[in-house]
Image (tube, rainbow, N blue to C red; front, side, top):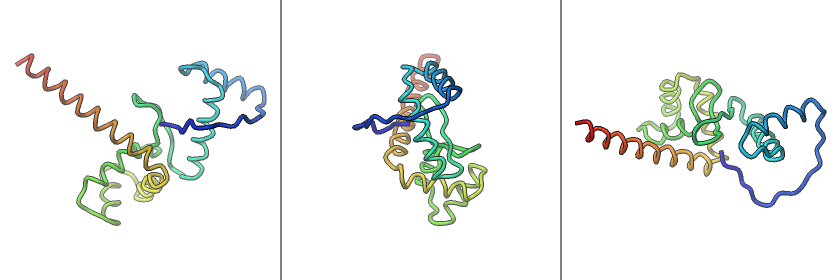
Length: 146
């Protein structure tokens, strides 16, 4: 997940001691160990989850990304919807069937995409590039062992 790191304004925020200890522990486990950056990410993700019930954030090789709780990543839903022939409600039903989730969850992913289009489009592009690299590597490997 990529965040806009434009101009930031320092803010004073108070945490009780137990929360601050946990925040520091989590920050030290992440690359850089930046407590402010971690707090920013957690607040941003928490606000997004409040705005889009059913959306969660999970880590992965490409970084943190939006996903449906107990379901696919949002970028996977969007990519699927772009690639199928159906449109409108039939597309949502098709996606729900493929991903084995309720149609309302597919609708949540589409709504999330509406507000975070650039972020999701970047994730789709990165996944497509990774797929091309993996296919090339497989092809080279097949030639070597043939």
